[in-house]
Image (cartoon, rainbow, N blue to C red; front, side, top):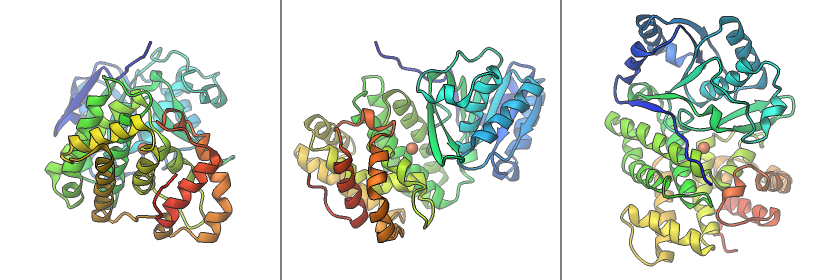
Length: 392
Ligand code: FE
């Protein structure tokens, strides 16, 4: 038996934030990031809409990028004091991910972080509150997914939490919020969304329920990402919907080794963080070459290629799909290799075997269409460093 889970309601379109006026409840805690939503006036708007709905609102602000276990526990504490019946989070992936984890410890104060690390092991939520998510970036799709990434800074480990209990009840996908993104963030989050859709489509858990969502997301990203990057707000709106469709696909079909590699290299090097979407964009064409040695995966990549107007044999389609992704990366100022990104060769070589091992054991590896050993992962990562073709 398989399961397919999404939020019960999704409000979308320009000005959809106004749905907050119609929310039924008494108290809402609004979980926010660093301040851009406040600066652009969306927090004031949200609070006044909630007031119109007769809902008392308290803010929990300044959730940091890559939110920590401590922030999650602090937020849960604030929730236990205020006792909201709605948890609302507005912003990028970080505040929404943090709020999802806070929700667990609000409802189950005796639960420990260790208790929920195991995927699909959460206690039954919605005993005290429901969850509403309002994304301001167009990539993670956390507003519709069963995932949350929380970092334990004491060990330096990022924990991907996964359980359908934390799939939000309501998502508001209002493109007005995405208009505030700077171009670099548009590029990175957009390629993250493309990666979600492609990995979901070729995942071993792909299904007739997730395939149409993934294919539609892929064609919408190819159609709209460059224009959105250059500031076209109609294209930006389409990207906001495309990333949400990609999220609906991957929350149910899961992902693959592009994400395993991005998770384990993101914070690995002293030269600085590799933004998640940028890492995905770099790795995606190499992983397609690796996975396409598997016959079923090759046929699926070819189907993706044909759905965006590419023609030829399956093998030709795979090559042309990789070429198309390369061209988009160039247009979006995304480097072709880790070397070009600025990772030092000595450090890369020194850390390679450990990173390869960690990437293979990442939660996303299990649904990748072709198995991979740590030795093969080392070779694959080396290809992404030097830009060499994947021939194994
Ligand atoms: Fe991602």
